[in-house]
Image 1 (cartoon, rainbow, N blue to C red):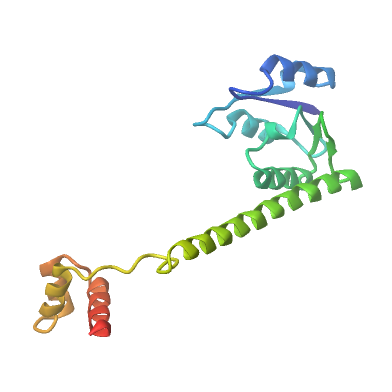
Image 2: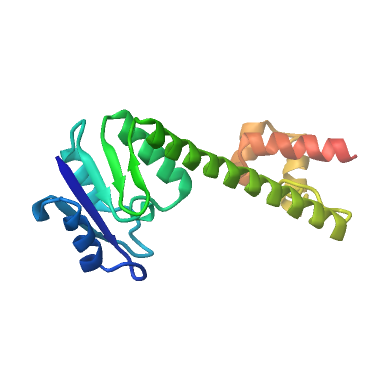
Length: 189
């Protein structure tokens, strides 16, 4: 059985244009599911309903790949799971993604795009950290060291006379925080 999926956003092909292309590809009008997405709702409810209705050897027809996913990573995972479930994806501007050699090649290409994006993200992060270190000699990654406030010093002084639990009740600091305060002050002194 052939099913169509139309996703309309504020920009991009209209519902009528997508519907016309999918109908021309042999999908019955009652088998076309429609979603309207915006900045708030990116996941299509009707897409989920459509997937629940589909069975192995069914075909999902979409006009373009960007209609079914928001990111290359999401797209690769989505396509892989459909093909594993025996559902084929007919992308009108690309071809059929199925378990054939050509379909597997398309999936592998999608996965390589995802890998490339991840590598580029890591490289940009590393480059940004290097630039930050060049601009600021005191730059270091992670959380900045916590300052020892008057309240923390007071709690430390109380630990010399009272138990951790008693000081925790008096100051509002947790026992684990009190231990960190004590270790930090003793390490610095």
